[in-house]
Image 1 (cartoon, helix red, strand yellow):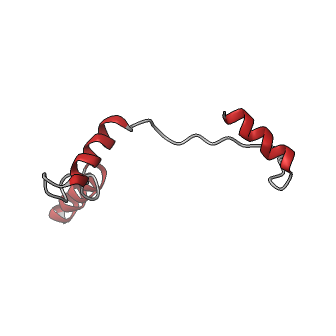
Image 2 (cartoon, one colour):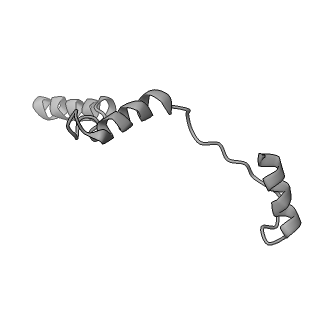
Length: 74
């Protein structure tokens, strides 16, 4: 009984603290072009979670509305 509880405790700790999956660098050789890509991506492109803009009463089929959005982005 005590061993079962101990093993269950180790399993729960493993689920919490051990990350799932491999990083991209571990799964390929160092001389690969993709290795450099993933290294630079990890270094420079960590910007956080995505942000979404919600547009109320916006009609995507109305040409005037879509022109307004393209002007705002430029």
